[in-house]
Image 1 (cartoon, helix red, strand yellow):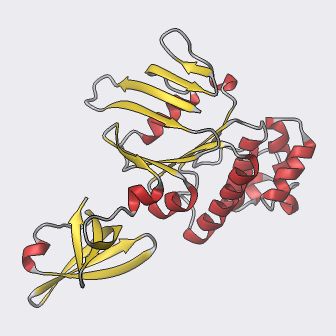
Image 2 (cartoon, rainbow, N blue to C red):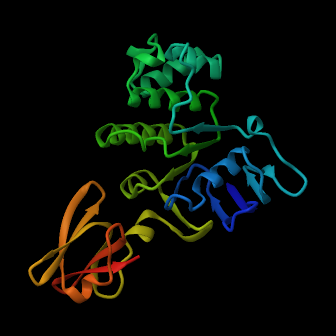
Image 3 (cartoon, one colour):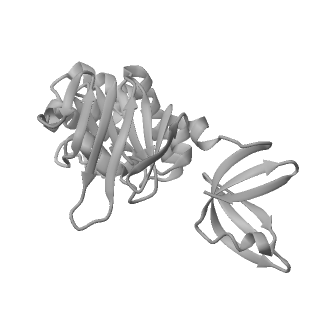
Length: 282
């Protein structure tokens, strides 16, 4: 189990991180929140790239506390960034074997991630999705007990992103690695994670399963879905809110009085009560 209870303050900044949560061994946990909420800082603390006050223990190994600080190399973790961080002068196979000289396991990962046909290709010859698969394979080469992913698919188009999510899910199920993913994509989090932590201004405001966090309804509501207002358009005596729900677009009619409560880019909860659709600010 991963247990972290820490605080990090920044000089010349009002923002500070104050975190307390647990992740079970083998669990897939997503850290969700807006930019600037502290997601990446938290991941860097877990990786050992930044220091914080408090403590972090994983599988009875102290990552840090008041007296101890374990270097990143000794934490038995894998890390996948947005920018691949691969060696351009090496081919795919060499990138994996640089992480660990284990050809048998490299072959296993190349098969699992459908990279066998690219094993002798140099990195600059690969597409973005292929590069990120290589980065994932290299992160797994040392058989980490903890896998940290910092929005690894955010720069990719939706079709490639969804395929890579499938690869990641397969990796997680195959090796049962405790995984922590940073994301601001609701559909990605819902698909991959079995635990979700929502950060806002450096503190946890909600945690639970994806259903508990994203689909919880109230009273006689039939459903409740997170959405974002793309546009508010006036049409005669009414307003139409154009909403983004994952990769889908829909619209809801609002009265002038209702429309006063919203603006473009607001995050809202779309729900059904009786026979009407309702919007509420989150």
